[in-house]
Every structure is written in structure tokens, then in C-alpha cells.
Image (cartoon, rainbow over all chains, first blue to last red; front, top):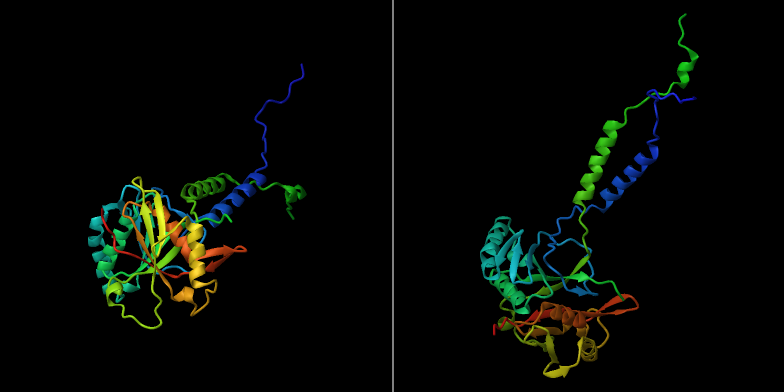
Length: 146
Length: 161
């Protein structure tokens, strides 16, 4: 019976298409990778607004305070009660004064959950005001539906 | 003179691809794992110095602030809107009232630029309603372009209750 040579034949696989595709994928991921240090916590469901267009400039050294639905603040990745953020802001203020920057020049980004109480957002603003901060950016998700 | 066989020119030079493919796949896994989908976000800028309300001296240029009251139902949803004491049906009507008050011109030195809106929201009101109200007073979309209205926005001090 005729049989093929079943020895250790050198089967060549053409790797070129796979390598091409892999490099394209790497390029894609490199481009979409976000290097900005934008603090976005998944626990926060931002309210959406058509007018909340992403800012063209970058806010210099902002302080981000994220208010959860349950009424706690996420500050630098830590869960803090609203009434306790004053101490953290005091620390920020000290650092700013050391760097010769005025607290009123800094922007506080308030990322509050849409279901949170407005009074708690106002409490955060009041505490920040008491520490000398006066610029606030109320963050909302950009809704591009027309 | 010794010469290599002419068949040497067509010899296939085998490159060991394994390490490169290993590295490439590792890079790809790294990028895939660190990929974070960032949704576009924007800001409503508010400047609220603490003593502004008390220290602001009245001057001729100053336009009295428009007071928008947002009342909450017991569950935190929006129960009523009022502008300068008059009830407003919804946010679209609020925008129309604002345009009626300050005019459609929003250029420099316009009434829209000078006018300040003060939001007086109930403590328990869900924040999403405040963002909707800010959206209604701060601009409108016309032919796909944002037309700015009120730029000065502030809040009354929080009232717990």
C-alpha cells in the first residue's frame, strides 16, 4: 500500500499575516491608550449634559472630589465622609502654599453622582470655600445626542 | 579557488520568530489589560468665593440675580421649578424664560454675560436635576452649535432639613 513519508517533515507555517495583524493590534491599543491621569471612578454615574463639552485646555493641578450615590467622597482613591474632607483640603492648601500658589487659583473638580443629594454637593462646595477655594468645575458626562 | 555552491544564494535563512512573537503577544496583552475606556466629560465652571454674597457692593453695572428654586419631592425627584417666584413647567420653559429675560445675544458685555443665576435647591434633590437646570440656563444647541447664555452661576448655602 502506498504511504506517505510520515517522517519528521518540516511543515512551514506562514507567520507573516499573523505578525502583521498583531502589530496592527498593538498600534491600535497604543493609540487608544489613555495616558492622562483623569480620575474617573466607576462607582460614580455622572449626570449627562449636552453642554458639558470636553474642555480643550487642561486644568492645571486640579483637586478632584467624587461624590458617590451613598454620600461619601472619593478623594485620591480613598472613601471619606463629606464632613471629613476639610482636613484633606487643608493638607492640599498647605502643599499649594509651599509651592507659592494661592488656593483660590486651584480648581476643584466635583464629580458627583447624578443620584446624590444636591445638598451634599453644596456641603462639599461650602467646605472648599471655607478653605479658600473658589473655582469649581461641576463635571458631567458629555451627551452628544442632538 | 574554493567557491561556495551557487545554490547558496537561494538558501532560505531561517529566523527564529518565537522570541519576537512572545514579546509581541506580551505587549498586546499589556495594552489590552491597561485599556481604559474614558468617556468624554465636560465641566460647568463656577466661581463662588465665600464672602461674595455679603461683600458684593451694589454697582450700576450689576444686574439683579435670577433666582431659580428647585423643590424636591420626598423621594428626591424634582417636584417644582420656580424662577424669581413664578412657577416654571419644565427645563425647556426655564430656558425660554431665561432667553426672554436676557435676550438671545450672548456676546461680550451682553445682558446674558452680566446676569447671574442663583440656584436654590432642596437638600434632598437628586443632583441630576441641578445639572439639567444648569444646562437649561447656561446655553442651548442651535444648528449643532452651542450658544452660551448665562455664565455666572452660583448656589445658595445648603439648608439641611
